[in-house]
Structures are given as C-alpha cells and as structure tokens.
Length: 158
Image 1: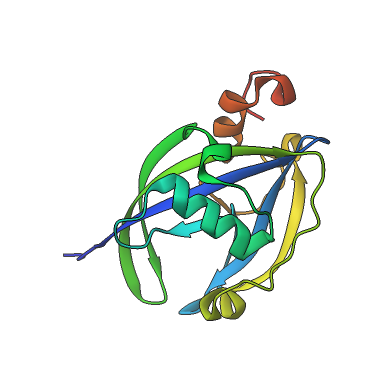
Image 2: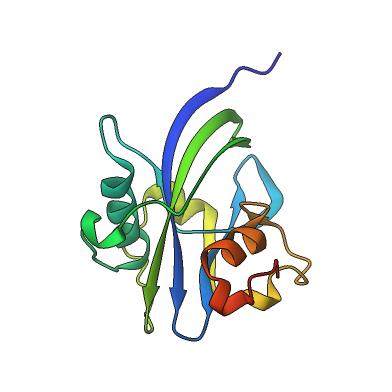
C-alpha cells in the first residue's frame, strides 16, 4: 500500500502577450530519466493561503513580484498523486492565471531542491503543447489553458 504525504500547493499559469506559457524543465532526482515540464509554483507553507503562496513562489522562481490581490482568484483546482525524490505525495493544488506583456525569467531565488532538479525554462507557444511529444504537468495542461484562455486557444483543447 502506498502511503501518501499530504501537500497543498499553488501554481501559476504565466502567459505572455504572444500567447506563450512559461514552463520549467526538470527531473526527479530519484529518477533522473523522468524528465518533464511544469508550471511555476510549489508547496504552501503551514497556514499560508494559496494566493500568498503563489505570489511567493512566483518571485522565488521567476523574479516577478505581484501581490496576492493581483493574482485574483484561482482559475482551476485539482488533486494529484506523484512521487518526487522517493516520497509519494497527494497534492491539492490551485492554479492562478497571470498575464504579462513579456518577462525575463530570474531564477536566482530558486531553493536548493530547485537548483538540483530544474535545468531550464521555456516560453511555450500554447498551440504547440499537445503535439510536442513532451511530458508536462499538469498532464491536461492544454485543456486547462483552453478553458482559461479561449481567446488564445480558440476555446478548444490544443
């Protein structure tokens, strides 16, 4: 029987004016061949609200400073189960949509874990995600983006 560590997280769908979403490239240290792309964000500190956590994670991982109020309300929520560095997690996560004209990503605020397991980032054209042949999380990212950005995706899954 798998024992899951409960975790709460806040993530950000950071989209620029060209209709691209920022994703980080990373891997699981316990399974270095398990490579994937993922959105900015991460685990919440005890007692931290999702908006406060998302704002904190955004500045740590991208250098973009926004207040929790500027993030607005979450646009999507889900629960996932995954393993990272040998630990199984059951994570409740909320996603915030942030639009920027453009942004130069600054990763100097990365934690030690992030520095050890994240090795790049890319602004992905949203319409390229589904056919890219890459692993990304959340696994239904194109459909999520289609729901929250119908003007970019045409309202249909990419």
